[in-house]
Every structure is written in structure tokens, then in C-alpha cells.
Length: 359
Ligand code: DCP
Ligand code: MG
Ligand code: MG
Image (cartoon, rainbow, N blue to C red; front, side, top):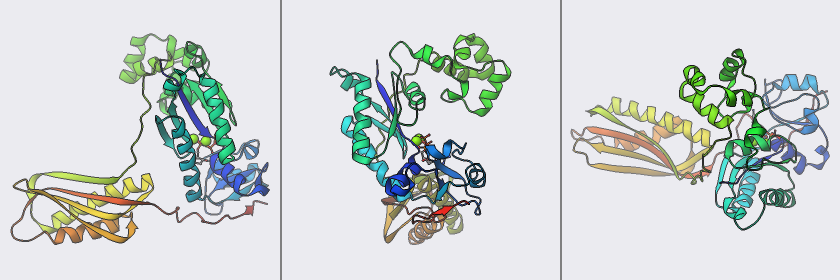
């Protein structure tokens, strides 16, 4: 049996702002873009939530619901810094940490439980340590699987600690709405609802063939989860050291324009990945394979880090041009980036604390 924790900061961005500026404590705070700029709420303090303000809501709506809320532009560098600190506290407890986003992670504490410590005590002491060292609260769910731990961490926010004891999984899940189940999106929830299935318990009780007919493999999977059967393991992600994309051609290519076009397309793909991972790198790499299968790379290290497709295709393109001589033809082209620095905050967002009351 596994013992898994899911830990998630309460009102992460908003709480960090309240931590850094005591004047904001106990006040409704929303972090996100301005109403004038059609911004949305990224995070709302629990004080703001009392007025119905929620994440992903247009800032304009938040402003209407809670006119005295204080809006602050996001400071991603600061949130990333806190995130790194909390992840290192988690890793102090166990190396088996799987971050899901800046503010949450799964922890596999099975081996610690084996040392005769109760899962609930492990979770409580983790919460204390985070509070003590970072001044912020996390909510923690404790269960025998990832999917249930995640649901549990959300049950008693903020500053929650919810333990689902071994054997209680099915009963814990039964009354919950189906959309709480892992992998059930709004569409599936709607289809299930139209068939009269509203709770996770309803799925657990359904005939498996009935679910399979309507939802295929996903139906069977949903039922397993609904029954509390989830064997997925905590995946320790290695730090990304490089990001790349490559393509092999059906027929070797020698034409410079066609090759540069491929480099552009690959640069676009790499840039998208970098943006998603919030990375930018100083070393641009080009990988080439000739028609005789000789494979080699060329790289260039820049004085500054790049992320955009334009920059990548420019530098990878330069590397490529230097290789286009004779009658060389290529089987494969790849573009990659390494030498990471964390990317700057979104330029749309002000980097400094900015206060603007709504009134
Ligand atoms: N976030 C965002 N846009 C969203 C949801 C979240 O930018 N639609 C950002 C801001 C959040 C952070 O991610 O602070 C963490 O997301 P959570 O879903 O964990 O939300 P919070 O931590 O803000 O609140 P909760 O107490 O519900 O966890
Ligand atoms: Mg959170
Ligand atoms: Mg979260």
C-alpha cells in the first residue's frame, strides 16, 4: 500500500502578496490583469472569495462583486522563488516529490510511514514547517493514492488537513460530484449527468459494460478511480536540461529554402515548449544527419538567453547555412536549446507591486 500526500498552497499568488505586504493581510486581494486591460483573476484571497470572487473570472466581474478588493499585478519571479523553497522543504521529507504546478505537489511518504510514523502526523508536521519557514499555509490531503489525495487536499481549504484512511476510499468518494473525479472534464460530466449519473458513487455502481459501451476505455478507467483503485506512482521529474525538436524526412533534402523552412517550424515547436516551461536558454543547438547517416551537432552560445521562435530560427538558421556546401543532403534536422535561465515575468504584467483599489 502507498501513502501519498497532495500539498497545495492556499490562494497562492494572493497569499504571497499578503505575506510581502502586511497592509494587505485580512483584506480582499486579487492578483491578475487590470479590468481595463480585460484581465482575469489568477488568484483571489479567501477574504475576496467571500464575495464570490474566483480564479479565471474576468477582473471586471471581480470588481463588481467586490468593489473594495485590492488588485495587484502578478510577480512571477517571486512566486517561482517561493515555489522552489516549498519544493525543497518537500524534498527534505522525501525525494519522491512530483510537482504539478508552482503551488502543488504529490509526495510519496510510504517509506516514512513504514518507520512507524502516522501519515496524518507527517502531514501536520509538514504544514507546520512550511508555515514556520515560509509564512504561508498549505492544505494537505492524505490518502493511499494520488487521485484521492488531490481531492482531499481541496476539501478543507484554507489551512486544511484531510485524511482518507486506508479502506475508506470508496465511501469518501461516493457522495462527491463526478467532476471531482480525475480525468472527468466538463463534457464527460455533462454526458454522465444526462444519463442520470451525478456522483462518483453512481459511477462506482454502474455496470462496467454499460460504461464501456458509452465511454470506451475511459469508462472502465473512470469506474476504477471511482472505486478508489488508482495505482499511479509519484513521478519524480528530472529538471529539464534541454528542450529540442527534430524531424526525419521521407526523402533527403538539400534545398536551402526547404531546410530553413524546417528550421523555422522546429524553432516554433521548441519556442512553444520553452514558453510553457517558462524557460529561456543561451545555447542554441542544430542537429543534422546527412544522407550517409553521419550525425553531428553545431551549437552557438549567446551572451543572453532566448526563447522566441524568431530568435531560435535566426541562430539555428545561421548554424545551418554554414553547413550548406557541396551537394550535401540531409535526412534529419533538429533544433534545441540548453543553458537555461528562468524567463522573465510576462511582459503584460507589471513587475512591481501595483496597488489599485477598484472604487
Ligand atoms: N492560477 C492562475 N490562473 C488560474 C488558476 C490558477 O494564474 N485560472 C495561478 C494563481 C494561483 C496559482 O496558479 O495562485 C495556484 O492555483 P490554485 O488552483 O492552487 O489556486 P490558489 O492557490 O490561488 O487557491 P487555492 O487555495 O484554491 O489553492
Ligand atoms: Mg493553491
Ligand atoms: Mg494548485
